[in-house]
Structure formats: structure tokens, C-alpha cells
Length: 64
Image (cartoon, rainbow, N blue to C red; front, side, top):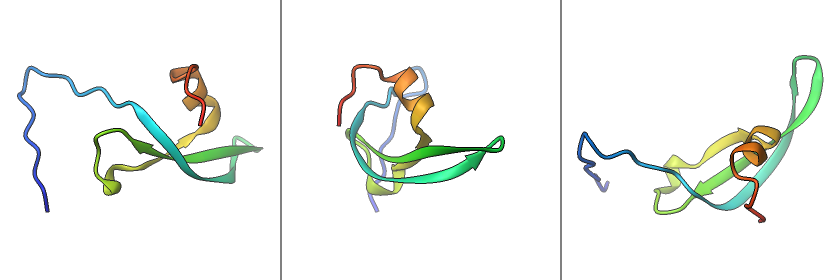
């Protein structure tokens, strides 16, 4: 296991690298898409599922 230490005064900003997978789920009685995001300079266990709509709002210039 690799441990990365980040100084307390430094904010880590995640940047998407690739969308690994997707799935559909129910959110407030609507069917929506979630995407599995691989983040740049992050370990595989740091990959996260994000709602696609929210993801596109945060990263409008990202094109997989």
C-alpha cells in the first residue's frame, strides 16, 4: 500500500482521467446514469461513482 501525504494547507483537486463504466439507477423516481470515474494521479481504490448529470456540471469540458 502506498501512502501519500498532503500538507494540511494544500487542497487536493481531483481531475477526471477516464470514465471506466456506467450504470442506470433510480434517483427521486427517475432513471438516471451514474459513471465510474478514474481520477488523474489517484489510486484505483479512489475511483468513484458519480451521477453523470452532476459530473458534466462540474467538468463541462471533459470528453471521454
